[in-house]
Length: 366
Image 1 (tube, rainbow, N blue to C red):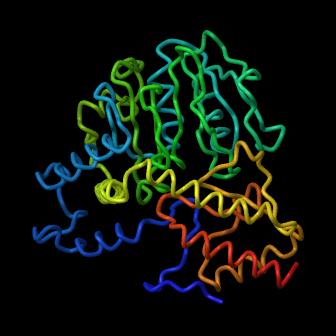
Image 2 (cartoon, rainbow, N blue to C red; image 1 turned 180 degrees about the horizontal axis):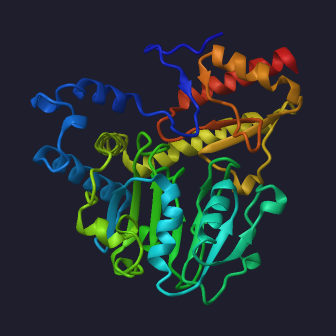
């Protein structure tokens, strides 16, 4: 039976590009061809125009308010997604040092490690690859290098469903975080970080833009011979408009920030996200038909991978789920199984629809 929605849309559990809030899509639809009566669409505006500069400034102000970003941090809206930051962050932070600490806790931090190894010596302070990326070791097991230029970690592993509950304590070393898949989902103390970066296509907006929050005193130390597009100082000086930015994605990010404020801000979304995750994990744990491979203390509230006791039923599960209006539940090709991504834009109603389907599927096939 199809999970009915009054607007005819399906429940989209994609890991990214992910679902956008209905209110954001409806606002963009209404403004698409004639933004605020100006007779043109946002994607037709000059990025130097008064109209678009106002959109950009509003987006930054709202993000600063939502995350409590101190004035001593610059907020950049850049292209290249989080993947470009795998190189850009070390290029700006190494400052002549040849070593950096990395936590390898899933496929995305693994990719960050591979890129960093092109630029410096990487010390794997945490490495759970041998255990299949199923947990995060206790701090007593971390092997931090006191001479490292910075420490890098991924707060939420989108593919493996592992999430740091707390910000790692790393002393006075600059802390860099890839927060792509859980930014704005829970409160964080920005002042504990040197750099936070996040691709937009999970909790911010459509693909095409990345948010980089960087402490201003760390800007300007990049080697003189790196390309201009990889220097944070260039982008800060140009207000993230050194070249033509992805204006439509920036606009959508701004709409999302406005929506988040209207929903009560990050604290309110954090409580909602906890309820959604509990609902889904409880359903998995109560059944012998489904299983989640991650240590309970380290389970992600954003990305929930799960498997069936009988793997031969996976294709049937996915096809029947799609017929029921539950889309994009296939696990990443690197791990298989299923995965439900339940970012900010996914309401509790959508998770309940998935749980109801899972229980019905188990009754019919268990």
